[in-house]
Image (cartoon, rainbow, N blue to C red; front, side):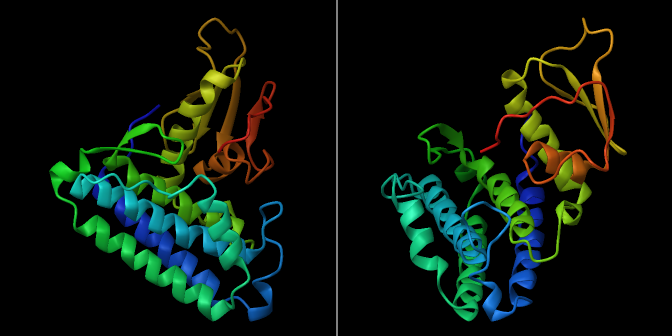
Length: 241
């Protein structure tokens, strides 16, 4: 896995994504909230509620890091899903208010962290130890990808180039051990990113080139390879998260 971006950089990306998501939700017609999102089985209300509850879950991790008192993302394994279901049917006004206030709670919790706090070890929802410094990047992924999932206009092209190329590196690092074909990802204006096993023995490695946002969208299952320049056999990808 590649290292996450600098904390302040990630927090700035998270703020940008939060503003974009709030603007998209504010622009919805009230009747659009119970309509399907781009995520199978979820309405737009599910997506909005999930992003809000994710903010609170990450606040729990930052509180854990700052105080030393174990505060898991969710009190029980079922809490995440039950909270999303409980909030999905709310009105647009309630959803937007919750989205805004939960975003502010996350920003306040991040602002209260000291340099030492960011180095504390906490555990993610799967119980895997992680540095608190990873939390801002987790929030970046949530706000930008779920802005796309809202299916309210913005597609993967809305993801800023610097965020998208970091996402390409992150997902490629996670996904590489799961593939048996070497691919060279070529985000425009950035160095190549390897995907899959070491391709040094391959005479004709697959290359996939194009805008970083489109490559990122393909990797995370939000876009197909149309609009990308592909040479060689395009692999089937495992489902990301």
